[in-house]
Image (cartoon, rainbow, N blue to C red; front, side, top):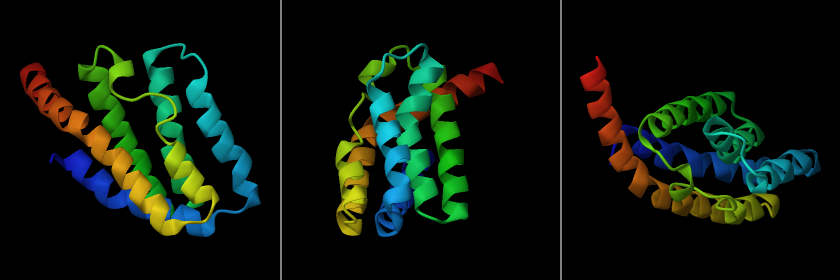
Amino acid sequence: MTEVSQVRLFIEPEVARLAALNFNATHLKRLDEAEANEHVAFKSAPDQIARLTNVHKVLAHICGNLFFEAIVRSMLKITAEIVMTVVPDLDILHGPGEHHAVIEAVKSGDASRAATEMALHLKTFSIEIVELEKVYRRHMMQAG
């Protein structure tokens, strides 16, 4: 497993777990909007990446740990750079609605299920990102 996938798989289930423990009514609108925005037509590849990663950012905020939030934002920036550099068709990598099970677990306060659902989501995504990260590293070595 490459570094980005390894760190995301280690950190983000814990972030989802903490988000479920900290979730309250004040978070509902922001989380629902992040999920709904995944289903609106994307204007560009950067817009698609921004909206499909927003759920992760919202969960990081809800988790209540500023260090986790900073780490998640950093990991998402690196992931976006990799994807934008080597993926010609973003639709095959990640689609709308793939965060639904995580969101429902967080909203219900089920911390264990939130962590499990996030791990499942990331494992599915990681299969693709591992190969992409290898291509990205080769690309960067050739460009440098």
